[in-house]
Image (cartoon, rainbow, N blue to C red):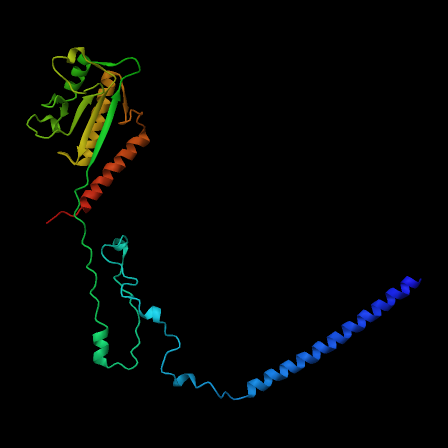
Length: 270
């Protein structure tokens, strides 16, 4: 029981100390606030008016020494110059508080405008189209069968030892619409060895533009490849020897059509 009385006495003493501390802090706060009010009412005696100063409080000697003339300018050599829609230059704004109009004119000369980029005169658009006619696995094409098939399809053996398909079969045509090689090195056809030739496939290729309009040349190439495949018992594939599908043919036609559009838009050198 004595212990309980002692604890109660300590608790009462602690509460009393806390009350005294709060009273002291409250009175100190009131004195501090009164001191602030007196300082605010006191007129400034030492500081001169800011408007009387001849120096700008925002003047920065580091910024004033920097050359900012090219800030924001995109020159013709810039990698984004071809994407600029409007020629705009950003320059620093300089204040002329005491300068005469003539001095201001001399101090801010008109910057030369960057030269407008001219359309680049590149080489004309072109592309190479290739198809392969592949023999069944383990059944290579034979030379005599190839000779009969190419004669039926309107080919001739050219000076480069490649079979050439001319426009409308005209023997006088200088440039073939497309040429044909075989897939065994060196790929050329020799009259002396044609009868003994065996090859896993044939390669038909052409460069566009050529003697025929691009889409007509593609149609002739596809029809000839189909004719050879039917005659020799093979299948039409792309240049990587993958089976050509209807989707692949449509994609190839779209590429040739895109070439035609780019050729029409091509800027020819004067």
